[in-house]
Image 1 (tube, rainbow, N blue to C red):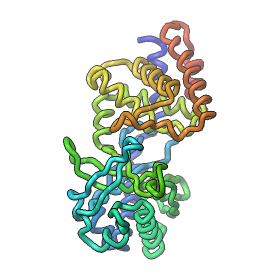
Image 2 (image 1 turned 90 degrees about the horizontal axis):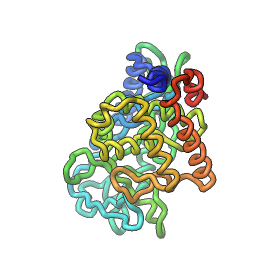
Image 3 (image 1 turned 90 degrees about the vertical axis):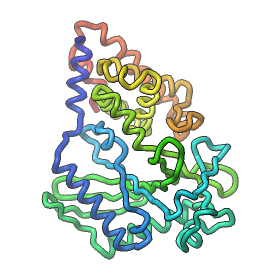
Image 4 (image 1 turned 120 degrees about the horizontal axis):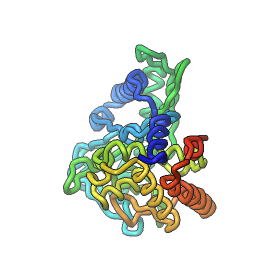
Length: 347
């Protein structure tokens, strides 16, 4: 084992978020409380939201020590969800409209969330309804919860596509990003969802765009690659923080990992060293920034880097490539010190 491999294993262990049962149970308690009072507040929400799905870094088990965020999908299974027609946005790869013309089985759909000439599900209407359910539930049922270990005060904020709950106790705080996910039917899997996400286009069409997602399949891709992949993804996050690249999200890294696993084979990735997987991921990430395109795993035409400005793309490309060019030489340096290696992953 090279010094570099040994050091990376140590650093990955150091930056890993402790798997503290109390912390995890507090998250579950707050999540369950919020969803429970929302179901009590709104009978329609109770009818269609009977399932929630953990996703993101916590679900992949790749959180690092200063990660205090959790991500949860609220699965919305409309009564006639099997009849929702998915209309591809031909000018916006990876996006679709949800046509409820054959799925308007109740007044909520017909008059509130899909009340337009084409019977498309409207993001703004869906957001307004869910936003009110969050606010009213907390107002009517209380913003304080005792988990048995801590007493948390809750605060709510809508941010883009996420409905965020901030939980704060005297000794710790964390946040939960709730994301609505409309259950849809597609071939080869029963875990497909459509996530409301605006994508600019002609007229008012951005209010009707939804992004295709199968988060549970993504979890399996990473899981099948084993611990080395999880360690490599933790290291990438630590490197990201060290270089102050906040718009490089965990999802970008996971996407690179899934593309690599698909290309090489999950079992082949699982037997590689942490240093090999880490450098391969970082190299692929650099290539994506150089090309200006990181493909979405469910539609390669969709670019996950489109949200960065030209100036940000230039800086991120420079910083990532500079780090890669230095780190790739470390396996061949027998006198490499731990401090020199650790410097790349420290804030």
